[in-house]
Length: 137
Image 1 (cartoon, rainbow, N blue to C red):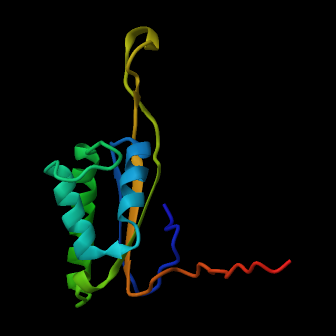
Image 2 (image 1 turned 30 degrees about the vertical axis):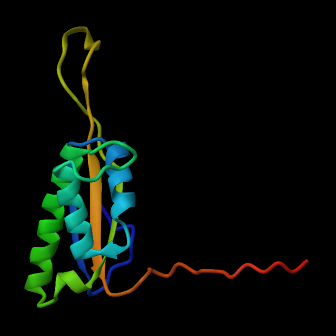
């Protein structure tokens, strides 16, 4: 899978997890564009049920994303960079659908998966142009 963010000489990690893509998208939107250290603390609080996103804790999703962030931190150490001073850009996409063998294929045959990609960068954004809107008529 290609990265949705153009990455050259940046710290990155990618993984496919057996979690709901909808829940992964909600957690990733809460983490996106935060400092890496703040994002990691937020996930740990989410797992310990100290903080919620719209009244839900998403513990399984949070644990899987935390594993990905640990990989990202190790990649940053390998490149001699301080991960805590960099911004996190993270996104989730729908993964492949796997099927379980069941008689008559009626109940519980689909298994969900999500692709999650994370990039650490010192920039505030990746080429997003911010337009100033004027009230001119």
